[in-house]
Image (cartoon, rainbow, N blue to C red; front, top):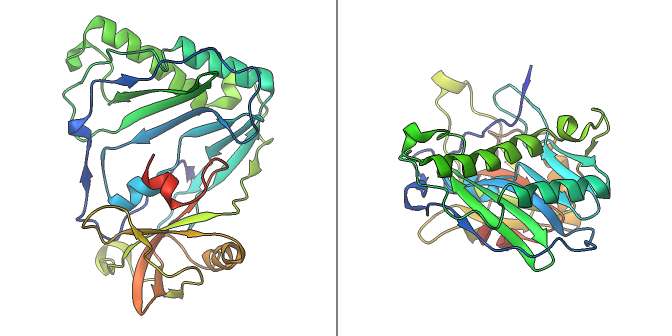
Length: 292
């Protein structure tokens, strides 16, 4: 049995970020016309969740729902086995789509209001994430962020009819890009595994699991990459992020094959819970995750 994606249980379960309640009613940046040509690693369209009730580590390491690049690569999260502990790495897959299909999806995003939708409402839903849509235009990236898109669907959630209509367009876009096979008529099985050359390792102090709930503690594995925890992900937080690149990438990937999501990693005489986050083609290091 598989599910996609599987959420990780963070070691520091008591430390959460509550950011949803302070979000705007919906923000957009104004786009220009679609560019005639796109760089291979330029983001043509990205959809991702932001904020919500989550841990600092999970917030930093969160992967986009889909990222479509200028050369037609669409990177999505594939299915994960429904087991605990889960795998140490996410199952990222690459679907190749035509330049014409890239244009269609970019046009669809513009028609749905990405970059132009303004009044999307603020439904009275606590702790929900926002959905951020980013589309590339001749004038640069255009974006729209909408709070509780999946959680509030009608006027009973404190939204006006116009707000519901605007949100429905974005929800339809989310549904479309979440199923590129159905939307574009692509044959399943054409996807390939995404091969990351650089990783972000998001490390938090290890907390032993409750044996009565999740079973025995996993064996520790020596961390073969740069010293943990790396740069703090926020003021006063003991969760950090370190970039793994070059020869270290192969070492960490080899060690990850023998580990899982609950593995305690040892570095500098301490144990750490590490979320391994493959960096995408437009991401260079931890800074890109901390500042997005």
